[in-house]
Amino acid sequence: MCFSVRLSDPPAVEPVWQEVRQGLGRTVSMNCRVLRAHPSRVLRYEWRLGSRLLHAGTFDSRDDTDYTVRNLAREGYGEYTCDIINEVGPGRCTFLVTGKAYPPEFYYDTYNPLWQNRPRVYGYKLQWTQMNPNAVDRIMVYRLGIRQTGKQRWWEQEIQVEGNIQKGELITHNLTELIRPEAYVVRLTPITRFGEGDSSTRVVTYSVPINPHLREFHCSFEEDPVCMFTQDKNDDFDWTRHSAATRDTKYTPNTGPSGDRSGSKQGFYMYIETSRPRKEGDTARLLSPTFNVALKSSYSISSPPAYCFSFYFHMFGKHIGTLNAFVKQKGQSTSEAGPVWSLSGNQGDRWRQAKISIHPTASFQVMFEGIRGPGIEGDIAIDDVTLEEGECPDPPSNPIRGAAAHSVSSIWPLSVTLFYTVFIGLR
Image (cartoon, rainbow, N blue to C red; front, side, top):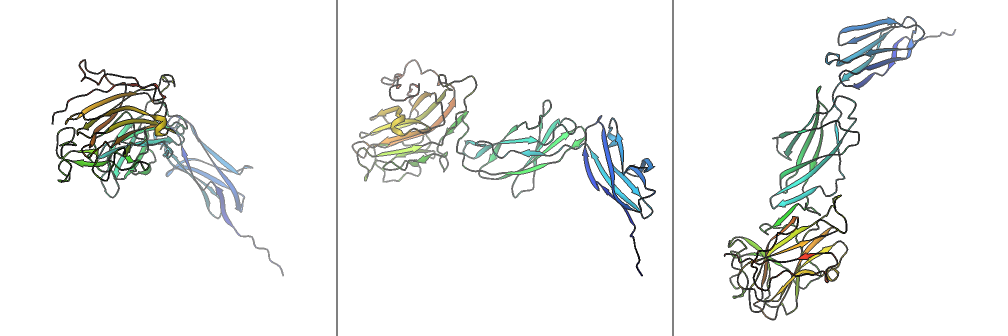
């Protein structure tokens, strides 16, 4: 004897759960569909918002049911359910209707996002796009939260948004006053008139920047590492970081500074020690980090942006050799670049300032080259190296004799106007 048994099940439906994001005043449509039901006859459906019944009915030949909210109001947000019922029980579709904005999506390919203008702090260019910005109401502000890793306290601020954010639009906000070398957790939350949207979180970590920000770069050599300056590996000896307070008591007299450019015995500077085993003609080269030049639309190769490159130097002693300053553009060798500034011989026991207007057309480094003179009384020092946007200001009307402006266009392929101005520094 053969028996046929058919199991009874409540309706199987889809979607079981779906999130619907929509702005106020818009239309929301929801659809609940029957996949299978045993028995399939006498199917009923009930639409509810929370516990409130919105609409009910029975199926005829269709296997789905729709519910539409027109002109969505604030009270229209919430959880909608559609129960499709047979004699066994219900199958349920659930729709969460919300005005929450989607999370922002951080952009991790920012070119050289980190910069450092001061020894103890750094800045970071934070960039992101907004996921589905038109899905809900306009984002009015972002709430930015930031905390140091390993700590609990958050600092928060609001970033105002002007106008509508476009899909794929890259948004930028600069984080400043970050303590080197700490890492930070960054949280970003979009806010619409509905309220807070979904947040995104990322970690910002410190690393030595390859291309520092060039609006203003200043290095007084007060901390080690020395503003990302590096020693040239192809020279004869190195520059050293010193202060009068830490200088060896056996140093060669009658040469070198007795304090930094400000006159402080605790302040640091870079210098070349020309005692033995150094010999005449030996060179020491100090390279800055690479500075990235972003040409503005108003500039061209024939009219590149200008920067004022300045530094203080101390060249005291009867055996002083030569101090050269170079600006090496990307791909140039030292010989191809040629010095943009050069001075030789004893300049007296005082700090003096050099200023050079430069017009680079590509990323570049500045380089200091000290060349040992004929004897041990030939120490050369530098301090307070600065690069600032714009031409150097005019020299004073009474420059020290021998320090007049002069052209070096024949030794540097860029169009460079060079002058250096000598100031007598008080010690």
